Image 1 (cartoon, helix red, strand yellow):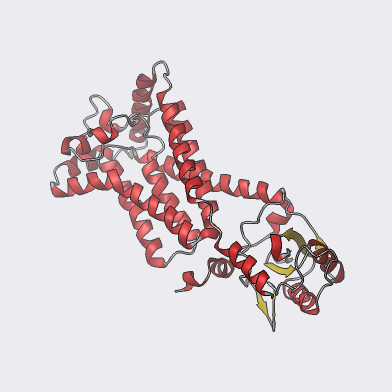
Image 2 (cartoon, helix red, strand yellow; image 1 turned 135 degrees about the horizontal axis):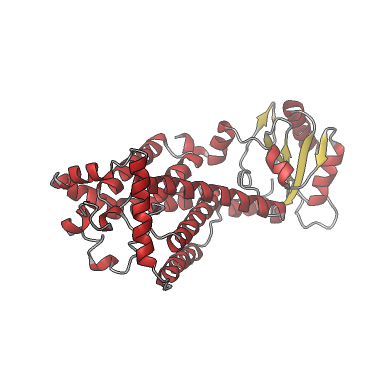
Length: 378
């Protein structure tokens, strides 16, 4: 590999989305929330109360309406009530922000997926708040709930000037649970250290207890929060398929230069040749590249689907999908060389990133660990 190619490869590995673009995206998302919340809807407040009472009636019919019991218990606990109030006000914000920053800084290959899932889940939740307003238990008249946060005068929560304009008729789904659960999913997908994943799971459990005990949510709101996270994950996956089908990057492949597969003395992520990618005459396929592709076929079965993707100045990548769903790749100096490689290796057939090819891939735990890089193995 030439020094020029190494420099180009290094730039690809270290590239992050521009932070100010991500910040603008967050502000735009908040703008959508504020704009929809400001739209006047006839009978909005009344519908929110009716919907809240309906949820409480449904839980009572199912004999799982335990919210009032735990709410009254917490209201008498003194310092624990104060701790729960502040957990409700701030912990989900801190955990979500920390997860986004960690993905951006330490797992950039997973950041795009995590951000997309987060945006989708919030857009779905915002639409639910607008179409199906729900008053929390603490605002239901004559329901007998104690508003522990307001009574305690918790700074930064309901009853304080900091959130005076917040939409309080947005109990379903619970974004406290949605954001906390999203963080757990994102950390697991990005192969975060086990202590971080365990702490995140504990945070979800504590948040569930707090949102119910403080009278801010019904337990069914938490189910709604998990549901919007699922929709966010599905939406992010669908978007990645759309991008890959139209020639965009495939989210499952590692950044340029990282070795995903090793067999015998060959790496499926092979060396880039010394010929520049923009050379006028396509470089011939090198023996090491042929050997790497043939070894992949031998290890993972025929037929092997092969997709050629241009990777800028570094050349092109021939992404291989084995008959068993395994992923590998061979880096070549040009698209033409990649096409020649496919023709030269028996059992390899040209493909595109369509639904069939994407659906044929199997991403195992070991593959995810390798994609996460050496930091995940510390």
